[in-house]
Length: 373
Ligand SMILES: Cc1cc2nc3c(=O)[nH]c(=O)nc-3n(C[C@H](O)[C@H](O)[C@H](O)COP(=O)(O)O)c2cc1C
Image (cartoon, rainbow, N blue to C red):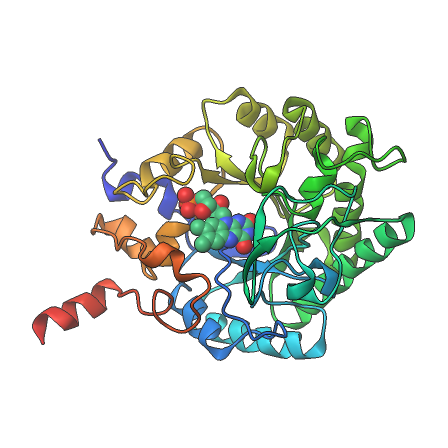
C-alpha cells in the first residue's frame, strides 16, 4: 500500500549544506551523450535540465575533468573555457526555473578509447576493460590502459580540483566526485583492476588513497559543503570485482567522515542490507540513496516512490532517481499526486542525439493540452 501523498517524507524540504531543497527527490546523474564532439554542452541540454528543475537537486551527468578521462563520444567536459561557457547556459536555464544543480565529475580510466579521446586511456594498472566500448565508428574492443605513474596521479588529482573550480564558475552549486560504476576512482578501489604495489595499491587502506586524495583536493578547491561523493558498493558494472566490498566502503567513509562534505551518494541502496545500515551509521552527513529498483530491470509503476520512502524510513536523507526523471520532466508533481508515469522509450536514446527520447517526454500539462486539442 502506498502512503497518501501528504504523508510522504519525499516532499518535505531539506537542507544540503548552505542549500535549501524544496523536496527530497534528487535527479540522479544520467549520461545522455548530447554534448558537441569537443565536450561543449549543446543548447538542447539547457532545455532538458530546465524541464526537470522541480527536482530538489539535479546532479548533472558524468562530465570529464581532463582530456584523457573521456569515456564515450559526446560526453560533456569541464576542463576548458568553452566548456564553462556551455555549462553556464545550462545552469542559468535551470536557475531561471527555480532549480539547483551539482555536476558529476567522471574520469573513465580504462573505460575509454583512443578513438574517443585521442589518447591512450590511463588506469591504476594495465588491465583492459573486458568488454567492447562505444566509439564514433561503432563498438570496438577496449585497449590496454597505461598504468598511471605517481606523477599522473598527482596531475589527475589537480585536474579534478581545477574541474571543480570550473564547475563553480559555470554556475553549479557543487560537484559530485564519481567513484562508482567502474570508472577510474572505482578502478583504484577494486582488487581486480588495481594491482599496484605502491602506496595506491594492495591493502584496502592503500586502495582508498586515490579517492580520498581526489575528494580532499576538490573540497579544498571549492569548499567541502559543495562536494558530494558517489559510490556503488558491490556493483560489478564495467568488469569490476572489488574483492572486499565490506572493508572498502567502511574504510573510505571513515577516512572522509570528518571532511564536512555535502553528501555521500549510494547507488543501488537497499535498506535491508547490513552494509547500507553500517554506512548510514558511520556517515555523519547527508546520505543520498539511489534505490536498487531491480538493478536495471523495468521501472516499477510508482517510479521508485515506495522504495524511496523505505530508504527515508531507514535513515536516508534524500532519494535519487534516474530513469524516472529521464522519462518524466515533472516527476515530483507526478509522484506527489499519484499520477501515472511515462515509461522510458528507445533504450535511453543515448547515441542518437537530438530531441527524440530526450526533451520530448510530456509533462502532465502537455498531456492535458494534447487531450483537449
Ligand atoms: C541512461 C543512463 C545513464 C546513466 N549515466 C550515469 C552517469 O552519468 N553517472 C552515474 O553515476 N550513473 C549513471 N547512471 C546510473 C544512474 O544514475 C542510476 O544509478 C541508475 O539508473 C539506477 O537508478 P534508477 O533505477 O532510478 O534509474 C546512468 C543510468 C542510465 C539508465
